[in-house]
Length: 116
Image 1 (tube, rainbow, N blue to C red):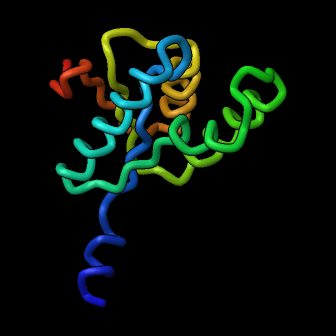
Image 2 (image 1 turned 60 degrees about the vertical axis):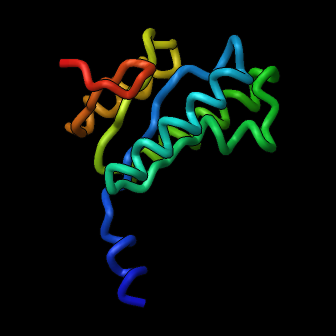
């Protein structure tokens, strides 16, 4: 159980990256970003990988519900890490909320290299 205690004390990191558009490629990249967070001692929270599993992203009402759930999870996180070569509309909303919460925001390119 000691190992579980150590893992439970890792920081929760909200993973923000593009989803819409080329969803297959974007999902693959988001998985890589989550692995990157794990390799850096964090627990990744990536709602855009979770909610589309059972909510229809093409249905505006369900998409909005998923985005609301995602923002609720953001409140539980220690930091937001934004990935990719562009900031999508959804990411901008997440980053704005994190900023209003005073949460640290780290920006990475699509190769997981931190940008200043």
